Length: 88
Image (tube, rainbow, N blue to C red; front, side, top):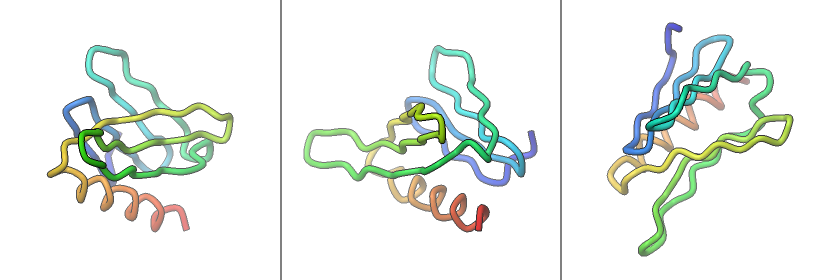
């Protein structure tokens, strides 16, 4: 998969190409989702002691979360913006 954008966190990573999004969580097999099935990507900002995360939700209702450290939050925001601009 030739990635257009990637996001890597301490919990795993996400990448997307023109056709699919690949989600890799640490210690688990990767999940490949057709882009047409990706409904939203949210970046939840950290609050006090809570970790932040990027959440991917599919049209079929499945949700995936990739946690990130505070210093990676901006990278997660950029990933979401790039994905949203790519889909328009």
